[in-house]
Image 1 (cartoon, one colour):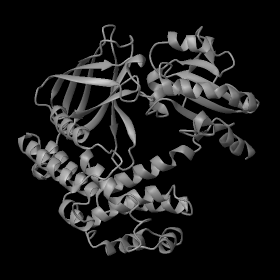
Image 2 (cartoon, helix red, strand yellow; image 1 turned 90 degrees about the vertical axis):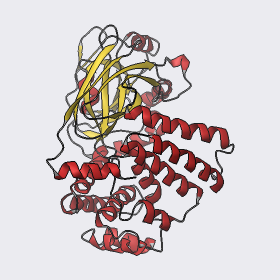
Image 3 (cartoon, one colour; image 1 turned 180 degrees about the horizontal axis):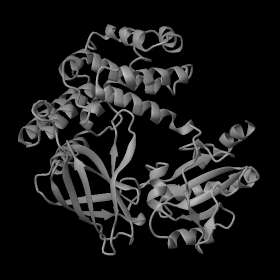
Image 4 (cartoon, one colour; image 1 turned 30 degrees about the vertical axis):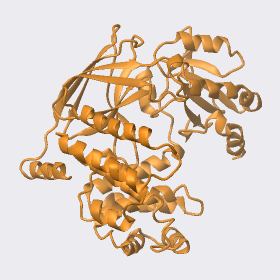
Length: 460
């Protein structure tokens, strides 16, 4: 299963990996002229801290070229107007692809986050295609055999699917895809209960390389260790857990306590489990958030591996990002005539910034709620709605039909706007305080009791 990791180790030992230019040449037939197409990557699969690896503008015919220097297989998402599709970059390869963006009436997706289809014209044996075949097998089996989607998968069905996936993995050329299939099988065993958690840990985790970059390995890892500390009294009671987090000066006592599991003797694996669970405890009532951040900061400099130190730092940054109170990035906006809108537009007031796709159901539903909130809060909060996708006509029509809504604005530089905040989905909401600092990013949406949230914030 882990030939891929061993191959990487051999390469690292004898000269190290060198980045190779990877090129995606593509076409998006129904692209809006000037549409921004980018590759979204993740710094790791614990923090899920997203960033733009590279991006470009489509030409008038929808053609585009994306280039990135890649050292190892990298899971990314191709993003066009915040519609995304999964892709696996392989170092030094050249791809020829066609994307298709579904129109609003062609999909029932509320958020419309997965309405981008992908055709790989070349090469035929891409890793993305191999993983797509594995996923198709899994999805076909599940849809044909599992009638009750809320019931637990039987051990018999899990065994049948394991056999199918094992055979497919044997036919798959790429070691990454083999490991991918192997950890789907591990997740099936976990879901069906065909093996005890202890046995699964011994087979798939303990003493095995940590496949940090394999998204299916990390999916199994998340399922296996979800709420591990808060819900496993045989390892640590809730009372002791509160004490270990809120009263201890370092993470070491908590890390040592986790040895009781019996399969976490490997320090890097134990540290990674701790990082994931600290991320969960940060949002759990009763745990001191400052202490959780302190432990993550300690791990970012003291953890046993470079990967764990990086993940701890990314996780601390990700969970605290919404309340950093750092100055809002420079934001240049205009009205429909091209006149500059000052930002923040009303000094001394809060600014509630809405980034939307005017052709998306979720964006429209949130905007429909906003006028009532504006009525009760406009004396203290300025509401600004920004078109965050290419093409302005639909947005202009929206503004004309909603005269009692927010200030409608266009970004001078769309790429900078979605990169600086950063924005990973639409709609996206940001609250900026009276001094021009970020108060919440993301902020609650109108449907998430925004009125109540603003009432609490404005009391301070």
